[in-house]
Image (cartoon, rainbow, N blue to C red; front, top):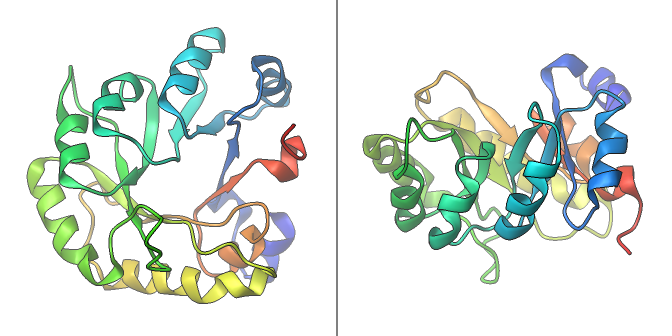
Length: 208
């Protein structure tokens, strides 16, 4: 992160590293926590709901996977930031409950892959307008591009997401977060303006 930030002329302090802890044990997460890290990401509602009560309260949980509308009530009270808002039914479920719902990122299907969730790039501005109108706090955009054979293959997708962000009106909490880049391509994402990267395997090693 430090090298990629320096090469891009950016400050490392402007980046948030979300340690993706899906399938990892409470003990493994605690090892990273005790090093001083606080931002962790999960992608399954039941797994997050099971782990969170067993871990320190000051962890900032990021939900980074596709979320079923009927599971929103499990995730909402725990989550610091939802990265995968992509449809009206989920927005409606996210708004239900006590207090102000956590902020969200709109997931954009930058590769326009049928098997992936996310908003079509050409629809982002319209979707943003009605999600803001519903009362959501939208902090920015997230994308999961096609799996790259080499990191540079992700660059056009990251650039597309950044250009979409640059074309949008000011978001309602003044933030402009871009959540993009994982183990295989986070350096490229940083060079293209990522403010949040989501890394698991490079930290924990291959999944067992």
